[in-house]
Image (tube, rainbow, N blue to C red; front, side):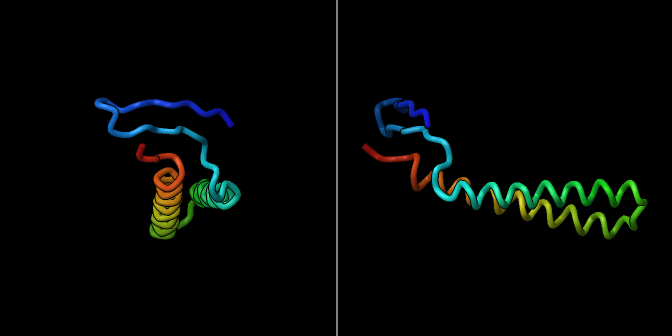
Length: 84
């Protein structure tokens, strides 16, 4: 894992930039689930599925992406940002 150091103006914070190293496996699992959901919606569109059913699935995908984003942000805040 590559590490680089950057300093904000006025030296307020020092950032240690890492990849996501907390719960990588959990994040990858979430991402694969989202990919599966997207593939399911693609199939639904190809099969001419009822619009409301597709919208229900896209809503679930948006929620899943939001949860993934929250998890990544939490990881970033707890492991990558450190006050000097």
